[in-house]
Structure formats: C-alpha cells, structure tokens
Length: 193
Image (cartoon, rainbow, N blue to C red; front, side, top):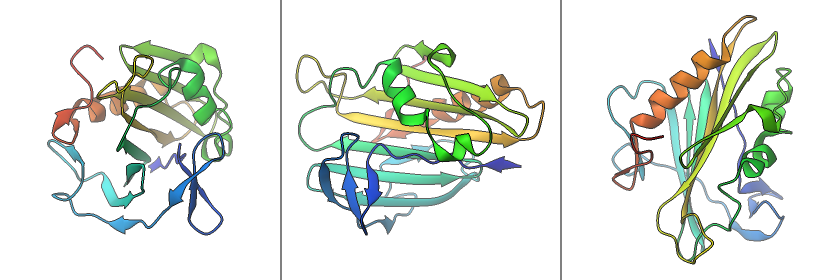
C-alpha cells in the first residue's frame, strides 16, 4: 500500500495564511476542488491514482495540489516574475524535505548525498525499515529575469510501505508519473529528464 508525502513550498498556517519559505505572507488560501478538465496539471493515460485535485488563486500565484494514492503533487505558477536563483539547486530540495514530518515519521531523513540532478529535475530516494520514498522538485517555464530558472515549480513525492522496498523502484514509479504530466498544456519534463 502507498502512503502520502506532503510538504508545501507555500506553507499554510494561521487559518489559511500562506507564506513562502522565508515566512512572508503571500496570500490567503481558499482551496477549491477542481475537476480534471479545469486543472492546470494533466496526467496522460491512467489517472486512477489521483484522489483529489484542489486549486487556489492568490494575488501573486496560482496553486494546485493533487493528493495521489501514496503521494502528493504541488504546482505553483507565478503570475509575475520568476523563482529565485537557487530554487533549482539541490539545497532547495533538501530544504523542502529534510525535516518533512511525513518522511521523518517513517524514519526517512534525506541528506545532500541522496539528491541527484537530471536536467532541471532534482530527485532523491531513500528507505527505512518502514517505507521507501522518492521526492522531487523541478522549476521550469519562462525565465522572467536572468537569474531565474523559471516561473513554475512542481514538487511532491511517492512512498511505499514495508521493510525491504527498494527506493529505486519508488523513484522509477515517480519518474514514470512525471513523464506523463503536463502543466498548462506543456510537458513538465522533456525526454532528457
């Protein structure tokens, strides 16, 4: 059975206040369910693992959250500007997931040595005696200013329960999912990632 991994770059707290990673308020979330045809993210082929789709429009960005069987996807599209330099670096993925409660409760603690770069994709996989998980982030889209890697961010992860589950298998499942994913009509990953 799969379990969820949940961590948001835009973090919700204080009854709907959404903050960036530096703790600055960027808006107030008002998550609303979206149907498959309303969503900015689309998955080609089998979509049976998608359990829930929600979206929120903030003044500075569009957010979409998918709950998957055994995981989670979170998409941000900035309305103006781009993500800062370094948001496409391994340290960013580590900052997102090193102290992730869902991972830590399963005995998984990520370190920099587990992170691999595959084009714009940052991905890490690890296992404990309880589960094997893979997490990722990718920044893509338009580069609104010279240091920006893009104006869109997708991140999330998958987990599988059990001792002895190979984290490479979970990573392969996550990569297969990402290979079928589009954002606003364009493939998130090209064949190189």
